[in-house]
Length: 576
Image (cartoon, rainbow, N blue to C red):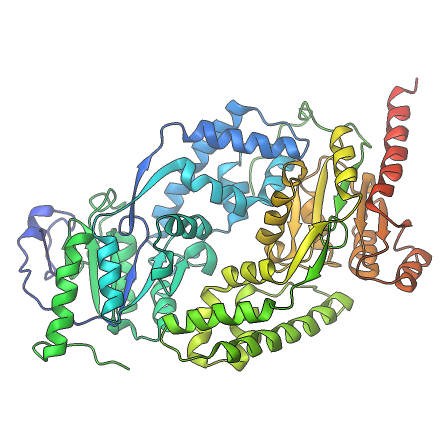
């Protein structure tokens, strides 16, 4: 085992291995109340996959085809390679900043990975950025749990040491899935990823968020990483009690000289178990000091995509709930979420009965619904969608112990997905599949504009019912940040279409959100369906004031609206 402790400042190269090996390894470390682990380089190591660009490009091409857009495999591969190189340079440069922010998923896809492709393709796929980046992680590299990690996690659990992941990531969702597949996810009270919190290491806030969620001060935690420029720098800035490096691919290749040093440097995570147990034992014996508890290039003019729709060709945008599916509320939805939150509370050391958590979820959801109705009706005019962290940390957390709220905020996206899964049982609305299939068979792109707490949850439903492959640009309020009737959510979906708003048919079931919203967004034809959320009088008023062009009984009846528009387009195109 090779170990080093923090050396005195010297003029030597900070990455010189011989200088590090000369440091006295005998310094005792404080006993940890929490162990914060980086993901890549600590919990897992990666093996690059040679064919990643070809495989990821094929995924992009497949998604483009669902949008009715052309994407040439070779051009996509070239853009992905250039984008990954640029992204790597950006990440290295960000490590130089004291408090760097993270790029959004849409920025990574539209402005880095697909920057060389046509605008409609970039904008359309940017709406699927979270899905694309989640798919990208296992395509780019194989992930392997590092030796000693299961034993380390089990020992931490047995000794009451709380565990968290703190990692820079393009897709925290992908990392969560990898940990779950390896059987390690339940070991961690919280998982903190840069794409989910908006900042990235070496920002000390990443580690402060972990400590706050676990109920420990920075000096009561150990942080384990694998890089000097991100992990060591973040740990020093955050005031972490002990800073450990487990060597991996990037350890010896920092992008620039870094003077900060770890307290302990190891060749493998399996070497960390003994120092941790020794620190805990010494603290228990009183034998050593311990911590006291407590967007880019545009396409060339005049060179449209070979599969671009002809001028005037219609496209179809659909609401999800009430149009594609109808749902039956699940009576135990709040109970199930209460049990999940009580389990989270136990992991972070906050006593909480499941019944208390259930009541808090129900009360928080009532607050959310009241605010949602106010925003949908007009409110301040912004129609801003609630952030998941606000829903769970503030509205639900209002009735829960303050010590639990940081963990609720960090796990908010997963909680929203869990509630989306639990709150109802959706089934395809009769006529919906018929409409979507007809549109696909006639070359009409189908997209979605939907208010939801979890776009991921909607995608799961579409996949389960075999509809996902027929859906193009999908704008979900939790991902766009704006709710219907706000114009921005419609514009996000329209940007992924190579057609004018006036040539789009939109189908919803609510007079204000769908009728007024679609009309104000400049959509050419708005159809409202009976049998959804709004009753007949509201739909009739929307028709009377010009917020709807048709009020119909079934999604299948929209086929006649599309057929008439398609016939007009065909007639115009063949006219002498």
